[in-house]
Image (spheres, rainbow, N blue to C red):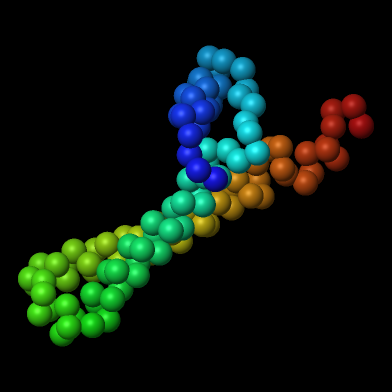
Length: 113
């Protein structure tokens, strides 16, 4: 699950395929978007956790940080929550359930039969 240089090459070849400029790329066991999904959880938990602590204990953190830091924490907290929910309900749902190579009906609707 560790990103490597090959992942950057895979992204490049994927965009070439998306733009119909090259063949469909072949991936290793874990694709670059699966690695991104995996590591994004840790980034999101850290952002939500730290900003949530700021908002949960404003008296404590107010001793060490200026008032504008709480405005930033509120923005980070709400934006990260919206980003996570939006990502789960769109990108993750598509990649897990609606990708053409994973869609369950793809084999039952053949032109021949």
